[in-house]
Image (cartoon, rainbow, N blue to C red; front, top):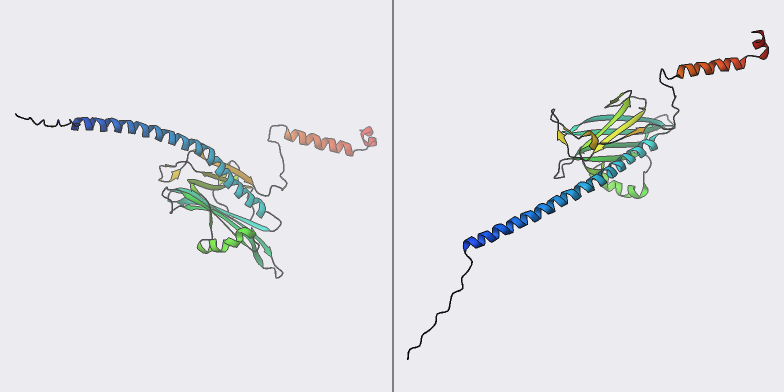
Amino acid sequence: MKTTVRQPRSRRGYSLGEMIAVLVIAAMVLTAILGVYGRANRAAEAVLTKIETPVLAAEVLQLIAKDLDRIMGPDDVSIQIKNGFDNGFVTAQMTLRRTVEDAQRQEQLLEEIVWRAGYDYDSAVPGLVIYRSYGGVGLEDELFDQKRDELESQSPLIPVCRGVTFFRIEVPKGQGVLDKWSDAELPPGVKVTLSFAEPYETVRGTLDVLEHQKTSRTIAINRTRTIPFRLPPGTGGDEAELESETESENADETPARRTRQ
């Protein structure tokens, strides 16, 4: 009697073409998912940038305004402003100095505050860092000054914020502005402009930011000073002033004098 041995059937595997088709379909699905995620992520970042950027810019401008307010006083005060470029980015520096005379009538530095921007060499993204330094006789903040020696041993300038792409300080004058100030007298005000937006290259090879992406604030110097008010020509200001002077003269006349006239 013969016995037949059945050979086990070999299972048919996937062909190379089927595996390639599956991989292609999976790659297409993954690409679509990553594309949707990337667009959602960019949209979220754009919303956060629109929310956070104006707030951060306003905070920096408020700090500068506080320094301009605190350094004003009866003592000798000077302001120096200059603008320039650092690796193509618009930068500025403002130095606020307040001095007093001692018993020997020698000038002593009471306070010195410096605001400036410099290129951020430590960041992977090109941009500027805004620095602030404080020096003088008195302590600015006892808690902060306990750590100031350690910080200033590395650098006298303390970083305030990073990622800045535009920083300019100007002095309003008439219908225009001045990009530097070193006069002995104080300027009428200071205009500070900064931005965190993506810069573009100008025809001169420098970097600039679109106007609507800049945040500006004009800060008056010595807000308590008396400002003369005059109406523009042609608005009746001269006539009103003349009428006031005439009424004043008539008021000084005695009744007898007016009767004789």
